[in-house]
Image (cartoon, rainbow, N blue to C red; front, top):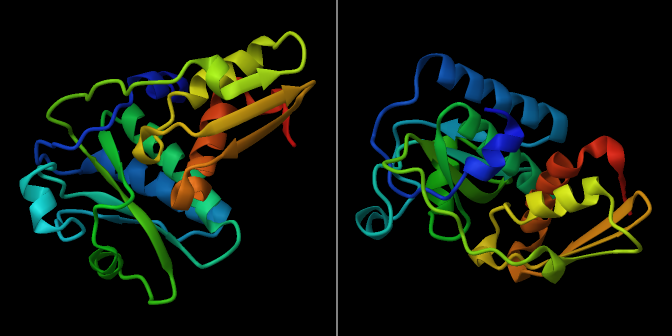
Length: 222
């Protein structure tokens, strides 16, 4: 499965089988996390066989067997939220190519417990956790806006722009709001996201998906 194919195949999964991460799958996932940390100056951490990041009431109701997760964290900076969103999107899709499922958890988790489980220093900001594992199901598609509701292009849109917008609408966002506004003129694209406290993270997720769909060589960010 390619990363583009993973975009269409990936859906939120909250219930897992409990099968452990091991062998080549575990090695490759750790390697991808390390690459993102090095490239973006983050402190993403994979925690395995640990349930403490989710409160007991969540584990008993809306989630099951969430025992492996990536703590999404890094040192405070003006670009931290967007970098977390971009790298988190990359890891979700990469996990999908490995036969894993995922769930971006932005609010219903224990920040302190996740920070402790990952062994992070107090000054590091934790912005969420990314559950990964073997899902009981493959999830279902989320309700999506139409391309014309989130995009506009000056003139006839090229194919790469259309594919970028379609990829953008496959991105996971806070509360499934898809609060994107993407505009194109020539080979310049601007992307804005208005989703409150999640806007920085959602912007990073959206940028990743648009880049993957459109092809980064075809445009520049305005």
